[in-house]
Amino acid sequence: MTAPTTRPVPGPATTMSGALLPVMPLPQGELLTVNTEQSPLIRDSLGPGVHFKPLRLDLERGEWVVLATFAPGTSIPLHYHTGTVDGYTLSGCWYYSEYPDQPQTAGSYLYEPGASAHSLTCPATNTEDTVVLFSITGANVNFNEDGSFHSVLDAALIAHLTGALSEAQDLGPINYITGGFAGYTVEEV
Image 1 (spheres, rainbow, N blue to C red):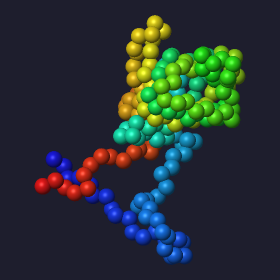
Image 2 (image 1 turned 60 degrees about the vertical axis):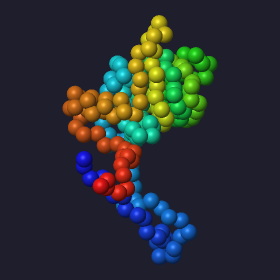
Image 3 (image 1 turned 180 degrees about the horizontal axis):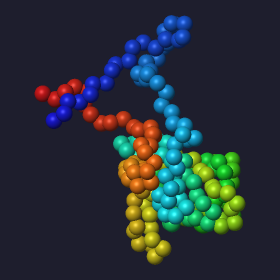
Image 4 (image 1 turned 30 degrees about the vertical axis):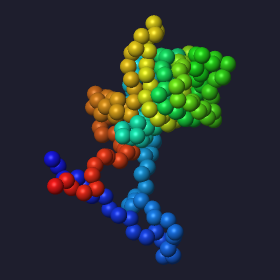
């Protein structure tokens, strides 16, 4: 058994001038940040024309944040969300086939409660790629056209796809923010 890593205990928090604060922050030596301009686009990840950049993949909490890019005319088949989704459209246009009268365009924010089901469509008439920032909790349970089970897409599979596709596409290592790792605070005797 490998020895667990002991996490540091935070000290008192102070302002820049040294005044004590009445809070106890987590120890953090640097900001956790990813610049999407410096991250390569993982192409054709979930089918032709469906690309993504992972920003945060927390396998323990089941949370995944990705910058998704969809070519005109692409779609994502029917899927069921086990958790919530926040989506912010940066460019282009998309809609759920079940709600064609509610297109999401640049500047649109969308919240999806858990247990929602839908099919994402980008119109073939789009003149640009559609780019959406998605923050997802849980998994997408994906279905075939006949309603039969196809697959499950979650933070763990996105992490796997990131590694496998970045190698296959010769992109090099992809930087993204991870979650904590379960362990013990004291080494077992």
